[in-house]
Length: 307
Ligand code: COA
Image (cartoon, rainbow, N blue to C red; front, side):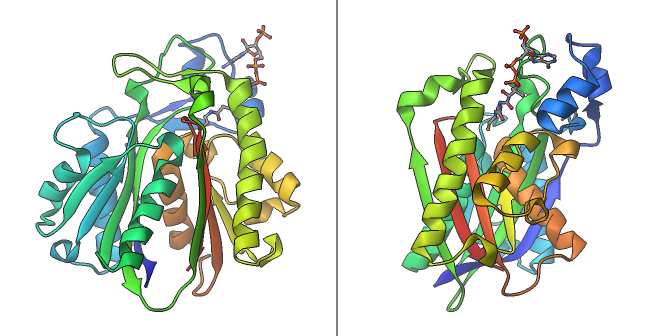
């Protein structure tokens, strides 16, 4: 059994902050932010929360996958910015969707969170325990950002993305995943505090570890980078994506990006991007996709999916 993605959804709150808006908040400039990150604006949840954004993305994913909420057996939510610690976000989403049969829990692997939740869903499906799984990444990072710290506040944004997986006999899937708690201090946030980051160290980690784990994945599947139709990377920074393309020697066109619009939405970034790719009609049956995530922990990994 393999989990095939049958539905996708995404939601970003209507209010956004442009780079020019941030010029009024910290000592920065649109040029600096664009050159160093590729980001032009980020959406900010004013009325929304991690729960409401997750519900909106999930409803869309279920509708476009033609899956009845009552058919969902497992809801996995990846988030580092829940509205409440208890109950978990997944249970709150379940209530609002009416997914009464589902088992629900949250997981936190920071910006690698969607990838880890996706892998968890695949493991359950592969074991035969569940066949229909909703995986959501949802983040209200604006409340974890220190709006006086120009090193971090320019990077992050709010939003949610969701996919529905159904177990099928045919299809391709494999994964690599890694964690290194020894380097955890590079990117931290206390439960009562704000995000703190050593930007250079995180940058170095990302440009080294992402190509390595993608190569590891390709070797496991005996594939070459040119066999992959699209690399769907966590959207942290344009320069990170560009460095990965160079190290893998793959043209940039095969690394879709939307971080200009959203900034870094942590565990929401991969499913939001995937949903946009689907809406644009660029995903065709049988295409091979590599998802790659990386972030605090440190945690990183890559997964191969057949569309
Ligand atoms: N506007 C203007 N100047 C800024 C700034 C901002 N928003 N943020 C930092 N600077 C300044 C610094 O204070 C520093 O000034 P100084 O030389 O006078 O001390 C200078 O710019 C260079 O800072 P540095 O941190 O070396 O910049 P950088 O080239 O490494 O770029 C990042 C900073 C954060 C964009 C880059 O390190 C990065 O992308 N890191 C990865 C971050 C990430 O993606 N994290 C999430 C992973 S999931």
